[in-house]
Length: 390
Image 1 (cartoon, rainbow, N blue to C red):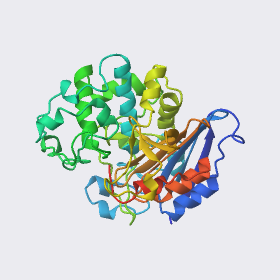
Image 2: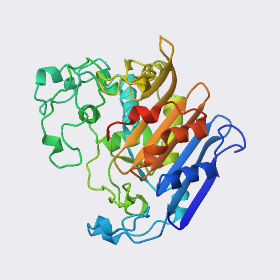
Image 3: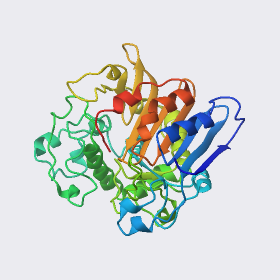
């Protein structure tokens, strides 16, 4: 492993000795064993509030080789930025920005629920009533897709019609995997479809809407779905399992399904304010947002043991108990190949955790992180395994 190790814990409020216990040494050892260059972690409990810390283990370097396009020559243990090597203290300071990948979906779903609460959208209205269906091969089927189907991943669409990082994506034809509304099927393409509807309804860009409803009220100044000039020095490169840097992915259009960049602490502010407290939503909208509504069998027709207690609400996964079912924990994962993340919220206990990594190995420690911070593994690592999704 690399020679420089940095670790920092910051108590944002309350006493660190009670509530969620943070085993910093154990987490550092997990990250080292998985060869994860950098990681940010945040926890919340009602006694201590939000506490955040970070781990970085790599050698300082200059990323000019990445800038020139020669990614393979980049220092294999760098957490780095485009212009310079990031020091461990800077990562631990909490201002380095990580790709949140699919963690942008729950945040976007909250925005949609705000619009529903305000009467600007309706959950059971066709998305096509707000935007066009020009890219769909089967436009009749596309007109059956409702806002509720998108948020709960029941549109019948594939995850992506074409790689969303390619310039051709936004003109590629969209086809169906299953009939709309038939079953659970995770789809970033569906969320991008709904994004166009939200932008049309609001008459604003995705980031403008996100700033109004989330980033500004919840104190998230470093967060954005689009690239910002500050990210030249704040964003961390992503690394594969061989320690090779894959740059920053800065030239990608804002997409609610996978381009959110943020910090662990800022995202925890969203988790606490929106998921735990329902701030900005009516009590009725908050309950409906978090109500389990579809059994989340990850791969249709191929039930696994880990699917048994996994459902989906209108924006995130839910671990349930009983036959009703009763929601116990809310969670979502993010996977942009070289940036991987996870959050879990337990409303009954009033606790939450998240972590962000810049490594393809970031999900190797899902269950271990949950067990370390919240005392249970929840079987999330098995559920997300098997395919790589943005």
